[in-house]
Length: 252
Image (cartoon, rainbow, N blue to C red; front, side, top):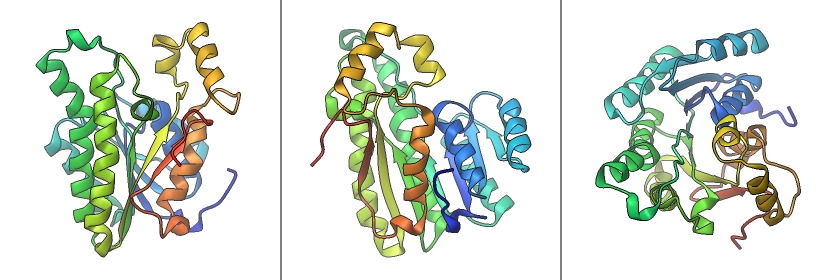
């Protein structure tokens, strides 16, 4: 750990897609702070839960579900409160960044991509706000793909634009309840999925040229900013998008 956020010790945190990629790094990072972590995912994550138990001396609560099933997602959030007695932070992380030629996108593809990348985010936010009552932090993972206008990713880019707009709207609506809503826009994070599907040596070299900082971004690089937004250290931040991309885009 590079920093300790004392108010996260014992706090209840819910993470979507918390068993692999960036989500696994977030689960690990919150556990290291002493948080009580629940995460959901479509695939069995028992081995990862065991790994975290060995590392931290306690197990995250894993609930297997498809986040596009709104009822199952919100029931999992209810189970979190029943188990841990409350909810301090929601991290909407799960996403599908599949590439598509825009001329080949069908209504079914569009609907499927929005279901996982946008609809699930809203209904997790809605449930979190109901469970949090007065005060809490919601963190929505977006992407610099929207800020860059990335080609070949129209459904994903559109969803991420929506996430940033939704984040600002919900921050305004729920601010009087003390609920903060922020977004994180990562650059190209080299998860196992990215390495296996799209991160050719040529693509990685070309993208590195766009970065101010000349290191490939790893899932662990997303942890510090997420902890900061979950903690009261960022108590007066809401409606913001924190870009963690090694300097590819400018937002000021």
